[in-house]
Each structure stands twice: as structure tokens, then as C-alpha cells.
View 1 (cartoon, rainbow, N blue to C red):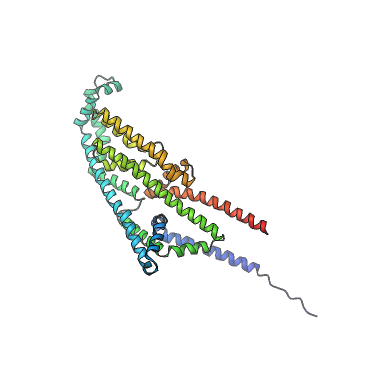
View 2 (cartoon, rainbow, N blue to C red):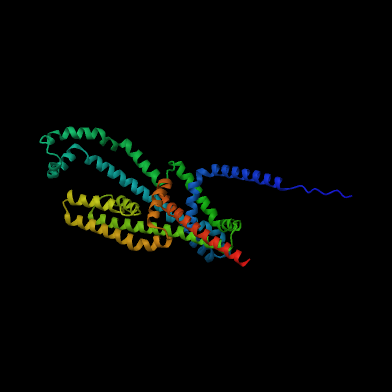
Length: 377
């Protein structure tokens, strides 16, 4: 009589292996993140630059042919450095120089003689604010208290601190100067290998996703298009807004025009507020301190006109409509992105929001594919 054969159940061992493998994989990912965390910002910057220049990279590869493919990464890195890094260096250098100039002028303008002279020029306004008949007698005493509390913040020792904080904000809270050099080197290194092996990396990621090739390529095209649209839209509109204010500043004869124009370009991304943070106070300065009402009206009117024209006619065609994201979400993503990533947040924020929208569309497409595949069965 044959004894029944008892088959061992492999399921417990299989589940044990899956649990062990999952824990090990999560642990490895955690260690990997800790190792590369200092260069996360640089890698993100390199990825954004790669996606933004992907079309140009592809055209260059096609133009040079198979024989000179090894030259493509070197040419692209050189072009990116010339277009992005070299102008950025001169822009930051000019901004710091003009900021120093303004701080020194402000220091001189806040001297006791200058303050009293300014108050006397606006005697009617002063009389409206206060009816104290001893106000002019007490001006030196009031100025002394003001100087003790506020004027000292503009001394030479604090100027470096102010500019250092501004620099760290512009550069995304990276330590100066070693941190900048290391992150810059790492970003260029990552960008070089993306230009060299980016296609292989894309193929590896897409091949390991459990979705159809058509769906993956469709989402990939949308992500690339979103990055390019955000960079082109934000960058071009900001440059145009800054250029318009710069020309107006030159016409009005205002000193440090590049600094004010840069501020206008930066604030132009904020709806409603926009470039008014520059043209409104400077227009009032021209009106009251320079006693030039015609120039003041021209300056403020032109500033408002350029802002409204670019914001309401040009920008929607380049950014909002193409991204298919509500302007309020783009605005909030810009503010949040700047807070977390510094100046790179201008790109990272809108791209993150757009990515959520794209992934939502991706889920809808995937669900539709599942329903169709079940229907065919």
C-alpha cells in the first residue's frame, strides 16, 4: 500500500523571503539617501537642466552623428556653463556691488543733517502728522533715539552679514564658498553623465515600470514638456519684466538700475504684487523728492502697463494654459518652492504641482487601459 506523499507548502518560506528582502531594500534605500543627501539639491538642479535642454541635446546628437557622439556631453556642458553659470556669476557680482552702493548711500542719507533737511522739505506733511509745537526742538533727540536703535544696522560689520544672507537665499541655502563649489562640481558631473547615459537611464526606469510602453512615453513627454514650459515661461517673462523696468530706470536716471530691475524680475512672478514693489516707491520718490510729476506719472504708468501686458496676455499663453494648472496653485508652488529650494524653487515648485496633475492624468489613463483590457477578455 502506497503512503500518501505530503507536499511541503513553500508559501511560508516565500513570504519570509519577501519580508526580509523588503526590509533590506528599504534599509539600503535609506542609507543611499543619507549618503547622497548633501548632493540632492545639485542632482535636482542637474536633472532640471537636463530635461530643459533635452531637445537641444537630441538635435546635437543627430547633427554630429554616431562618429562624434563622445563629443556631445562635452559640448552640452560647455554651452550650459556659458549660458547659465557665467552670466549668473556676473549678475550676482553686479547685484552685490549695487547693494553695497545703496547701503552706503542709505547710511549717508540717514545722517542727522539729511534727516532734518528731508523733514523740512515736507513741513506740511510733518505738521499734519503731529501738532506738537516743540517737535522741531525735539528732532535731534528723536533722531538720537532712532540712530541708536536702527542706524547701526547699516554699519560695515553688518553689511557682510546682510549680503551673505542674501547670497545664501539666492543660492538655495548652500554654505559659502566651499559648499557652492562642491555642489556646482557635482551638478555638472551629474549633468555630464545624464547627457552621456541619460537615454539608458530613461530606458532602465521605463523597462522596470509595470505599464505599457505607450503610456510611459506619453507621461515622459508630458514631464519633459512641463519642465521646459516652466523654465521658458517663468524665465522669459521675468527677464522681460526686469528689462522693461531697467529701461524705465535708465530713462528716469535712477542709480543702481540693475539691482532694482532684478528685484522687479523676481517679484514679477508674484500675482497682483508684481513689479509694483519697484516702480511704485521709485515713482513716489521721483514725485516728492525730485519734484518731477511728469516723470513720476510716466514711470509709474509705464511700469503698470508693461506688467499688465506681460502678465495678462503673454504669460498665460506661455505658462498657465500649457500647464493646465490654476494660476493660484502656480503662485503657491512658487512661494513654497522658493522657501525650500531658494531661486531654483522658481522651477521646482511649478514642476512639482504639474507633476501631480500629470500623475493624476496618468492614473486615469492607466485605469482606462485596465478597463479596456478586462473588456476584451
